[in-house]
Length: 325
Image 1 (cartoon, rainbow, N blue to C red):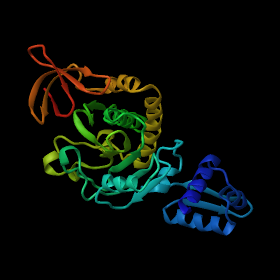
Image 2: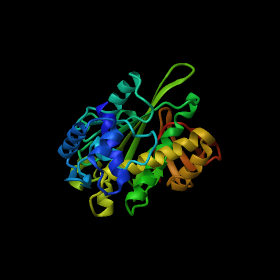
Image 3: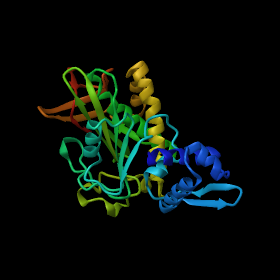
């Protein structure tokens, strides 16, 4: 209940566009007393908001905090459902683990779990993901009514939304390496891990875990990945607002997700291919059953990578580590 009132308060300030809103108007909109409004204002101030109060005029937000928080994300969030319910934590073992628990407990679609720091972050194949406080570590809960075999397509959809968000908030032009790596100048800046909870005939939830290197310096990366990883700030040459990147991602994801549920994967596929760095290139694909070499010639309408080897045989690759030769 308290979080719902806080959302209404932040949405009202956002809609006011820097103008004062009277305490009585806030009380009417929130359905509470003016004293309760004042208490919520004080909580926002504790979160770092600069809120001006003027007698007979009311309140207005002069400045939002640089600190990442659920409130900072909600203020200015341009979505209808995605990200409207936020579970924010200063530190978590894993946003993915908590998202699974919340999904089991009935969390609504679009719920976002986000942490300032992850202590046990994981990527694909149980690899460790270095999760410093300067990045974005989040997991999104979805409940799509789609066949189970279509769930992996959501990884590619998320990749497109991330690229669009980076383009929105920086001057950077990222690329996608199939299926889930976002690259800038050949170095990895983002990883995506999609997991599903399902029965034999239906999906209960899809959890999309996303890690984005935002404001890390080179010294923040462990020695073993300094040559292969980068951050948005390193590429842009200045700090980037994590809140802005998250808000932009959620906006683009909702647009693409709505399109996907209405028209299927094909329009998402066309967008994904426009950002793909590996298509048309000679690649090495390391699968669980062996290593394949050849040219990446495209993806299917199901998001499966197609590799053409030196003998002209076309292989369908569902899961692999890809290296571009």
